[in-house]
Image (cartoon, rainbow, N blue to C red; front, side):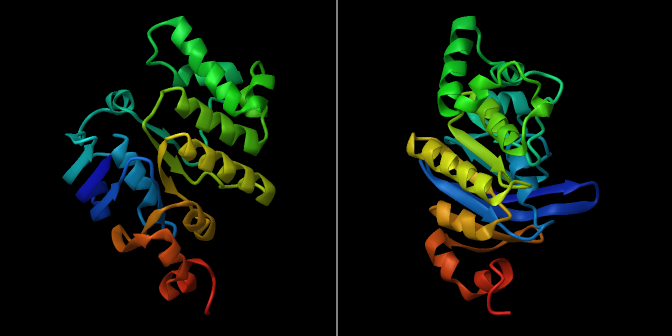
Length: 236
């Protein structure tokens, strides 16, 4: 479904991605793990059109998308849940979700999508007239995911969904991600909690300073001594 080849992106003179190549097959959860500053979030933002591609290619469903603006990429079927959630704090829950459904041409289609999101996240139905900024951290994360789902994506880019959440809420969010995948949604997951990400994903890539240094089946990487030492806090 998604293929990156030799992808290079930068912030001014500083190269954040130094020739990344990866693929995501339809129906998979693929994880990107690595230390802060490794290029994980930049990878997602470059896929979604929020960062420029200096060199390399991005193909989605067989078509080149590098250089397309974000709204075109969303229309193609890719939606991103950004790090830190970034909901509209002064809009209600329902208004946040409606912003995510901006591509829908009819009110009936928008209402159908709202029903689907409320079915997946009943708490959002209960809070739909509440301002987004007054929700708990876990509820805001559900709202951010729900907003992305309003675009009817084929591929969901998830950036640090567990960030800042209590452990019990982290477990709940990861159950939601697993359920969405079981319903057919393909997911590319960036997650600082390497153990949880590798337990959830089918395959994974390890990024270090803008390069892929390891890749493979997630279960195998979970047992890799280099990963256990660097990202799971073991063997030190």
